[in-house]
Length: 136
Image 1 (cartoon, rainbow, N blue to C red):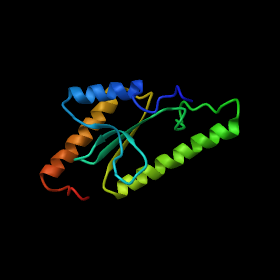
Image 2: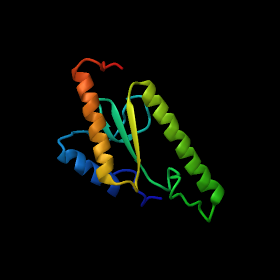
Image 3: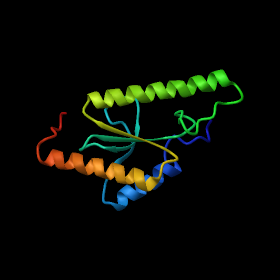
Image 4: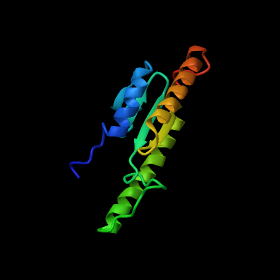
């Protein structure tokens, strides 16, 4: 378990590199909300965008998740708990006015970065035009 990375995974690093090359600046492995005991992989605080790059095994990817062969009850329960926590995190952030973007580790980093760039720029434009309040 110690060898399993919780941050700076290869998919995260690839997406961050592409976003940085587009001129976007962000926080890494940060809490979107101060009282929330959960971190997003990439956080754009001014535009309230939280990005999560979920591992196929740990978050129960419908395409790639393979149930464990040993200690199935424990590991399947752990993955189910992760999935429930993901949905709860999404709900909390959306209620606080955040946009939540979730990607699977197997998705194309280029496509993920394009989607993030589009949403961040849209929210930035809305913020500048006054359509999106900072407290929303």
